[in-house]
Structures are given as structure tokens and as C-alpha cells.
Image (cartoon, rainbow, N blue to C red; front, side):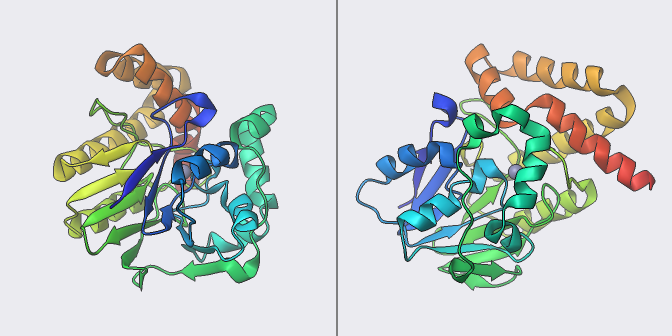
Length: 276
Ligand SMILES: [Zn+2]
């Protein structure tokens, strides 16, 4: 049985969801939420973490958890692994986005001992999960298909959708958004024909094909808007759409999980890179 664990980021529900099944934790969340995670794991002692990628909202707690559980193993894409072992570059990049809020948002980002890290390439099967390399949101993103149930754990690749609504936003923060790669990765996920998607932001999605279509549209619309509209108009469009489709409490969840100004920055950087 899979458990969806709301780690209550900054005390807010429906922002960051970790998953536990059979002692495996997919994306434990940030260190600032680690006590909530551990409390909600109850008597379960995690034996391994399956990381979709190393962004702090997904994997920031990894080092702290390794200290707490001396046998804990960590699966992560090989391109992300060095930045878990030495998080200095990751922290520098995150500090550019979050500045003085780093500590409050993410807590302690402890280094992960190298001997705990199990690097992935994509294409292998580990712990009953098929692994696919799925760049686009991050160049080191992987997704996991649980073979026994057909549930796909997709990190940020299938967007941000806050229940009970189906409005979907593509999380496109800097530094390595790649729209074409992302669209290809969505095909990779669709080709699994998963019976459900498990999003970090937030929870379970059962209308898989419709949802993946929404992600594609959200991503390409946002990419066009970033190219054509400029930041102010881009942010206003994103906020307007969320406001129309959801309610004020849910708007806050979206803003926290995917700050609109960062969505613009990531896409703007993508277009500038493309233009050379
Ligand atoms: Zn991310």
C-alpha cells in the first residue's frame, strides 16, 4: 500500500507530498519538514529513498535522513548524485532564487555520504520500480514506475495540480528548463500507460491521459507566453488562470509550490539559451 504523506511545508497542506511504500520513500521533501515526515511515517523505518531529482523541495531532507538512519540508501540520477554528496553548488543556485528565505524554506541541507548513493542512468529496475530518465524540468530528473501497481511517481514532470482542482501549471524554475526534452519525457511517461500518476505537488491523478494533455498544454502555453509577453504579463496570466480555476487557499498552495516569477525566469533562461 502506498501512503501519500503531506509534509505540511511551512505549515501549509497540499504543497509537498512524499510517498512511502514498503519502507521506500519517494521524494522525502525538504529538511524543514523532516520531523513531520518522520512522525507521519510512524513505525516505518525507511530503508531507501527514491529521488526524482535533487531540488530542495523534493530531496532537501536526504542528508539529514541519512544521518538519522545509518543504513538508508539513496537512488538518484547519476548527474544529480555529485550535488547530493557536495551540495555547495546546489545551495548556491538555490540561494539565487530564495536569498534570505533559504533556511526558513528548506532547513539544513546536509551532505549525503557517498557510500549511500546508488546512481541511476534510466532504463534499469530497482526495488520493483522501472526507472526512466526524464529531463525537461531538471537535467537529472527520473521517474519511477511501480511495476506491481502501475503507479508512476513523476516528481515535477507532470506539473503542479492541487486537489480538488484539475488546473495544472508546469513548474519551470531555473536553471535547466528544456521544453523539447520535457515534451519527449511526457511521451516516455505516457508510454508506460500508468494506472495513476503520483505528483509531488500534489497527490494522486487518475485521469492520466487527460492530465498529461493538460501538462503539455500548460507547458507550451507558458513557454509561448514567456517568449511573447514579458514577465509582468506572464505572471498576471498565470495568476489569473489559477485564481479563476481554484479558490484563495489553493492559490496559496500554487504560489508556494511554483512561484510565478520563477516560472518566468526558468523559461526566459531557456529561450535565451536557445537563441545562443
Ligand atoms: Zn523541481
